[in-house]
Amino acid sequence: MPETEKKRDYSVRHSAIHGRGVFAARKIRKGKTIIEYRGDRTTWDIASLRPDSDPDNPYHTFIFELSDGRVIDAGVKGNAARWINHSCDPNCITREDEKGRVFIEALHRIPPGEELTYDYRLSYDGRITRKVREAFACRCGMAKCRGTMLLEKKKKKRKAARKK
Ligand SMILES: C[S@@+](CC[C@H](N)C(=O)[O-])C[C@H]1O[C@@H](n2cnc3c(N)ncnc32)[C@H](O)[C@@H]1O
Ligand SMILES: [Zn+2]
Image 1 (cartoon, rainbow, N blue to C red):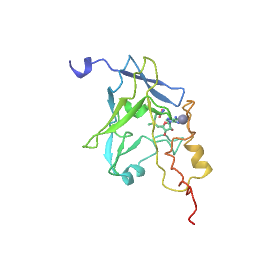
Image 2: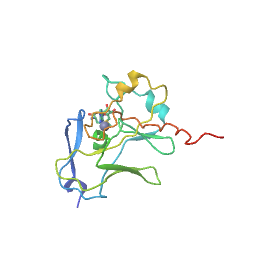
Image 3: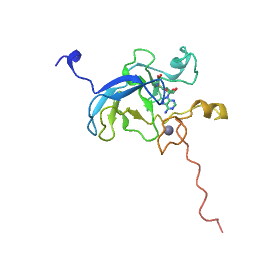
Image 4: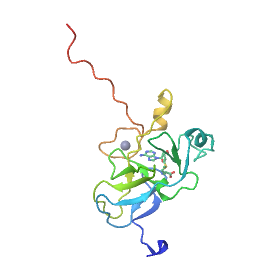
């Protein structure tokens, strides 16, 4: 079937979490690859020199970090995947293949109308001040919400027993 005639599994519309979001247009089975996260493949340094993706919010991001340190900047040549919001209890997961292509897959069966989400696990270079924490505050609304889109660095566990 030609690409244009293929029925999509998703649609883009206003989201209660933030701005635009991506929603299941039909039932999506567990494990299904829904969409590729497309955009300009570049370095973090180049992507960060570009104008803000949201002029009203310097912390807004369309950038996806790859395992080799490069990024996909969906602000340039991006597709609908750039509208997928973060959740701390998501229904999707991202998978990076050996060529550094990123795909969004269903973590479990998703009913029609449900918003598609994945855990951004964002990293932030620099001190996490109150302002930064507020800028990355999560509004996913899930019972398991950890309050932030940032990846929580686990505190070092205290030694269970003192050295005698
Ligand atoms: C890849 S965009 C997702 C599309 C976004 N809704 C929009 O309309 O531009 C990522 C940005 O959306 C916002 N966002 C996504 N998930 C969020 C969440 N759970 N809580 C608060 N803001 C969120 C943040 O500003 C984030 O930088
Ligand atoms: Zn959350």
